[in-house]
Image (cartoon, rainbow, N blue to C red; front, side, top):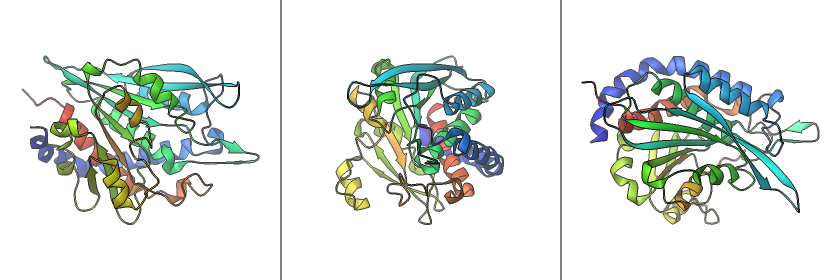
Length: 296
């Protein structure tokens, strides 16, 4: 069972938090910088954020490419998006179905002379995804792991819908969607998971501890009641919905409501970096339990 490997993986967790935190901070600082101008989507050219993410995946040794697409924005106007897709192939003798890790990198862009940094939404998810990719690259894996940094999520999940349509659902075990991971003082993450993925998502709880707790739901309505967000449909709230639409099970990780969401206050300085490094370690332990092949 996947959860049996958690205790061994946990031994490596404490020693890697500090190192991961340094790179997480660097990546977060870059993606929220003025040069990235709020990571708006819609331009024909690949933006600075897409290029940076591509370079980071490539540095980690992943097979990486851009996936460009068009979408409608406004009356009669076309927007252009650029997903960044990176793959770690299965390198074991026997391979199981693949995992798809997603996190949208786009945000609201700029308004006049001001830009929206989008540190939690969703630079936090992207930097954790980059950290996990780098950690898993050195492991023997009995699954192919596909990472996709999606574009145009804020405008209608367009990048995720485009990417999900290219997949064969029969060959994908699970989508793990990361969106807003900068935990607050409550030290909580909320997970919405497909019921049909219970044999995989049972590995989530053992990958966490009492410092960062994970609350797992299989019903969007139950999650909305717990968070007191009656107007939020958590199934459709982020990119996991695109995978759900094509029949791929999912596990969506996020903090729920952020008071700085879609404001200029969602800044680098508001993110507790040591906690974000812990979150990354926990999610990595979960993914590793599903994917890392046992030593022969």
